[in-house]
Image 1: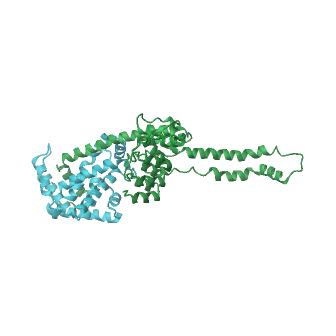
Image 2 (image 1 turned 60 degrees about the vertical axis):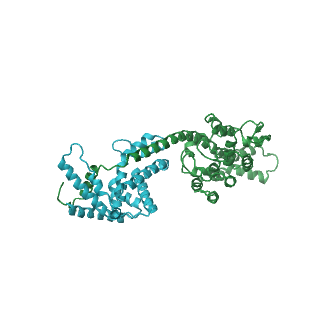
Image 3 (image 1 turned 90 degrees about the horizontal axis):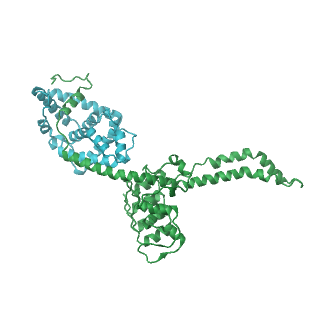
Amino acid sequence: MSRMPPTPEQPDDVDDQYRRASALDPSRPGEAVSRTVLAYAAQLAAERAAAYAGNKLKSRRTASHAWWRPAILGTLAAAGLAGLLIAPQFLAPRAPPVAEPAPTAQAVDSTASESAPPQSAQTPEVTARPPVPVRSANLPTRATHARPKANGATAALPAQPTSVAPPAGSEAAGTGAFVAGAPARELRVPGSPSAVTSIAAAARIGTNPSAALRRAAEVGDLAALEALLEKQTDIDSRDGAGRTALMLATLHGQADAVTALLTHGADPNAADADGTTPLQAATAGDHQTIVAALRRYGAR
Amino acid sequence: MTDGGESDEALIGRYARGDAAAFELLYRRHEMRIWRYLERNVGNRATADELMQEVWFAVARDAVRYEPTARFTTWLFTIARNRMIDSNRMSRRQVSLEAVGYEAESVVAQLTTEPGVGPLAAVVARDQATALTRAIGQLAREQRDAFLLQIEGDLSIEEVATITRSSFETTKSRLRYARNRLRELLSEYA
């Protein structure tokens, strides 16, 4: 060992001494610590691998489902715009040539000939408007909330949910069947002696009560939600991504559905497979009403 | 830190997607750094073991939330420091190495000769370690924390400042005082 005291001119002398001493220091964390940590991590990894695979499927389905509305709105806007542009051309030849040109017809003609600038001036106002953002897109979890750009192709396909087949036997399969539009038939809700005969009710409830409950919560269908809750459907059942009805209602900003679920005893702290709690989801989505409701029921 | 392999950020990303082997690589890579940071700060091996476990549990649990806006080591040492502070608060133990009986002697007593190192070199190493461990134990808490963060985490002054929620200048001063004090103490022991 150098017995010379380090001088201030040597900026790394202390660091070097520290590193040398540390390299020879045999003290280590206990073996039990390493074993416990690695076992815990491996267990989480296994759960995560399964959830990740499920989430990829689910996010594809959710994304394609969530973006059909902007796609339809965009199509309608384009159709409307085309109508505005084309209609004057059809109207102009039909103007009666015999009669004294009415001032309104002239006005139409002049509008037709000069319409391009004003209409094109209006066009950006209509088409430049960005698609209505889906509220859940604000959430931090990446797997369950795909971004619009990444799903641009599927966004144009509103019927896409039917093409993604969830794993057979899973609850997601029930959801998929519901989304695809289960054939209208008489359905019996477990625990209920009465048959659900209304086509609308059958469509709402679907073949899997738990999946139907989550679906009702997601879209804010309070009538179906109440009906299912009265049938004692498992209120905290989870989908493939570990999301409860309460979580789905939260993600989609369905404040009334959230309140109904909480009133019926839904677990306000049931986290999804990623560990995101309803309160975190509501906060991320800036759903203040839902945040307040969740807090009232003890969400953390 | 890459040590020639995959980056920490890539490994934590792989683990977040369910690859347990990636976590083990990360753990082995940073195990000793975190251990020394904790053990030399709290001065108690049992507490350091507990904290070590909690830190890595948190890493495993929160891997899915890690966003590579900061280096993995910054994130890791932030967790370690927060756990240490929480532990101190909960147990109402103020970390005073002198008060709790710093284990420097017992740690140093366990220093063994590595294969290929002669007896004289072992004595020299033990002397160095004794002096250094004692000196670290005598630093002011903030100075010791900043110094250990920087040297064990390979962190920049900015990163240490971020983790300790201090200003750049304050952190720089703490690091300078820590090193100067260590020099003084080491020269006394020499």
